[in-house]
Structures are given as C-alpha cells and as structure tokens.
Length: 425
Image (cartoon, rainbow, N blue to C red; front, side):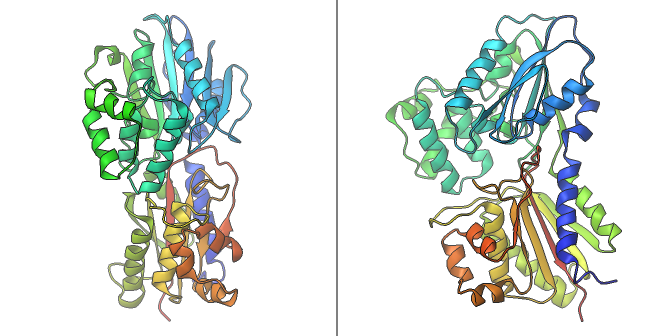
C-alpha cells in the first residue's frame, strides 16, 4: 500500500494526533484531588494553563477561586478562575503583575486549604517575578541572551530559578501550610518537574554556583548585582527537603512520550510502521537534523536499522545558537538542516512542529519537507544553505507554502518530528 501522494496529509495527521493526545480534557480530570475542608485555590502558569483551568472548573464539585497566567492569545473563558495573559518567551510587565498577584493570593492559607497549581511549558517567562537584585529589564536581557546562546532548557531554567522570587519551589513554600497539588504538562526532555516552568512548586537541587557557571559558560553578561546575588548564595532556591514542601504533591498528567505514541498509532492504522527514537532528544537543531538525515538515508538505502516503509518519530527540545537575523525556530531550523543534508533524497518526507503551535516567536508551528523542497527553493532563487546560515527557517518554508499554521493548541508537550521513508523502488 503506498501513500506517496498523501504523505504530507499523513504527517500532518500524526502531528494533530500528538497534540490531541496532550489536551487537558483527556489527561487532567483523573488527577484531581478530593475537595478539602477549607478553601480551594487554583493558581498556575503556562501555555496550557488556561485550558487546564477550564477543564478543572468543569469537573470540580465544590467552590473554588483562582488566577492563572497564559500566553497572549491562549486565554479561554472560565467562570470562577481568572485568566491573565502575558508575553512568551521574553517576560513582560503583565507576567510580573500576575506573579505578584498569585503570591498575594496564597498568603494566609491554613492546613485545611487546598492549592491546585496548574503548570505547563512556557511558565518560566509567563510567571516572571525577578529577585529584588534585578529589575524586569535586566531579566528580559538575560532571558534573550539565554535563548540565543545555545544553552539547553535545563541550563536556562537553572539560571531562571536562581534569579526569581517565585520559581525554584518558592511558590509552594509561600502556600505553606496548605496542601499543594501540582498538575504538570511536561514540555522538557526527561520530564523533570524542576525544569517545567522552572519548578515554582518543586524543590530544586541545583545551586547559585550552578547558575553562575552556566552564565559564564555561555559568556552571558549580567549586572554586577546579579553576580553578587549568585556568588553570595542569596538567590538560593528552596531545596527538596525544605519542611514547607512537606504538604506538596506533584503529578505529571501528560508528556511528550504520550504524544509520540498517539502519532505512532496513526501511522500503524495507515499501514506504516512507526519507530520512536526518543522523547527527549536535545542538541543544536541543525546538528540533530544532520544526524537524523544520516539515519534516514541508512534506512532508505540499506534497510538498517529499520525496513522501509516506516516513519521515525522523535521529541524533545533542541536549541538554536542564533548567528543570523532571519525568522526561525528550532523546529524549522532542524527541518531545513535535515533537508540540506538529504539533498532531495527520493521517498523521504518530514514534518517538524512545536506542539504549542508556536515555533520560535511566530504563530507558525513548523513546516513540512518533501523530496522536491530544495529543488523548488532553488527555482525561486532561494539558497537553502544561506537560509540555514541566517537562521531563516520560517522565511524559507513560508516562501514555498510549506509552513504549518494551526493556531494556539492549548497544550504543550514540546517538539514533534516525524520522518517518513518510503519503500525502495
């Protein structure tokens, strides 16, 4: 059975299935705790937090109030939980105001009260409350520098935790002595709760010294006050053994692996064998593209390590060291690198998208790659290698009509990549 003509549709269907599997409506209700004797307060942050709040409202049997902050354009109507919107990936005044209000809301709670914290990817910038040692402008500058440095998400979030007044377990500590139940949607490789939105309700084993070493490793300039904060240890996060976290529970409700398995099922139903290569692949996006191209060629030409037709699935969070001034994101960077390395290899198609619907800073989820993509780009006078060197993945694929635009998905389980390798002729 061949899908040559419909391969782009198949790849898009797999992406859609991955996103659908991570919807809060499917994964959140089963994890709701029993209502408390006292108050129920809902707080949270992330690209999926508003939809999580709506689902919680629909399934909660008692009274509740609260506030969550999500990305601009990701708000949904709620009746009892207020939804605030703020900037991502660089924090803004609205995010800082929402963080202050959330900290104020959790003051004065008792042991009879319950705090349900809804956390998903994007919360690091949306829940922005800098330590007193730096202002928002400095935090924004450091955040931009980290995003362009090639640092991993774990490294970036280590720095964020130690420059924050709310992350790194501080929010859970502020809720003490109330019971805190955190429901997480993971968007990070390895699903480490401390790295999801920089762990506002999770004890943090990393240190100020670790954060300082990361800043120095990537040669990120910071104000003297930040250096002093980290060198002195004054910015230390809340540690896992802190007694204020004794009443805190953390539940991972969905993750990249679940999304990949849903995509794999779509492939099977279409008669194509799926292979999940990993849900936590990291590294420079263009380097991962080259490696994946090598694997795809080996499958196509040698039947190793898999027989074609098949589809190679992977997730995780790659990084981009920005050297050019193009329009891009890590998924289109990966895909363009993959295409350059494959150089029009027949029978190989691919899709790479961010499951939140936004790759980089544009409302474009990612793109599709076909065997004739490079040929078509040359025909339009677009040099794919130059586009890659300029970090211009969005510009490249948009010019070819190959961008994937889906709007806000209301969830976020990180990158989605699928490479289809057709049967040999």
